[in-house]
Amino acid sequence: MAKWQQNIRAWIGRYFDLPSDVMLDLPRITTIGSIHVYIENHTGLLHFSEEEIRIQYKRGQVRISGKGLGIKMMLKEELLLEGELKAVEFFPDQ
Picture: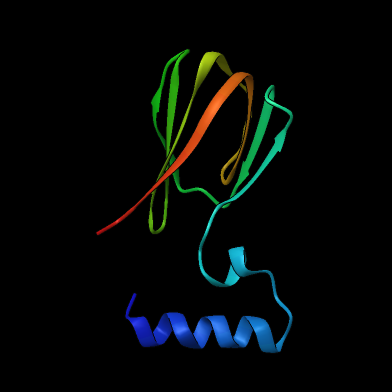
């Protein structure tokens, strides 16, 4: 997406008081302590193991690392993970 399109989307989002995750195609990630993570607005699961989960979103990837990670629920654009969370990292597309 071109820089001017991002700026227009951001401005529209602020003007109409819309959530930035929706306007900018970003994932919404909610953690409950270090035992659950709920991810919305993703485009797919790339890698899954008990120590690492990688998820694609429209502008890059998210890597979640931990111990004993498992998928509790998976829908088209939503994912609920559980386990001992250690890190959440973002890798935007270049």
